[in-house]
Image (tube, rainbow, N blue to C red; front, side, top):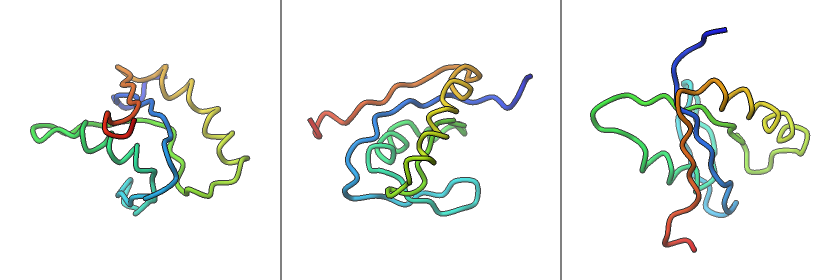
Length: 93
């Protein structure tokens, strides 16, 4: 099945401290700071980028919801044109 073109984004969850807000699919969502940093560094001023990733909408997500999202990882990454791996900013080590 052919779907929309996108890049996969695999990232370490990072700390739950200092959560950020971002717009996704017309909604304001809460994301961890490491994902925010990745999105800021990967954005392009010249073209639109579509990134697919597992997103933990709330820092206090229940385990069942996290397991569901982890289960989607294979599908997300196998259908992506490329996969980007984001670990952590050097200043956070």
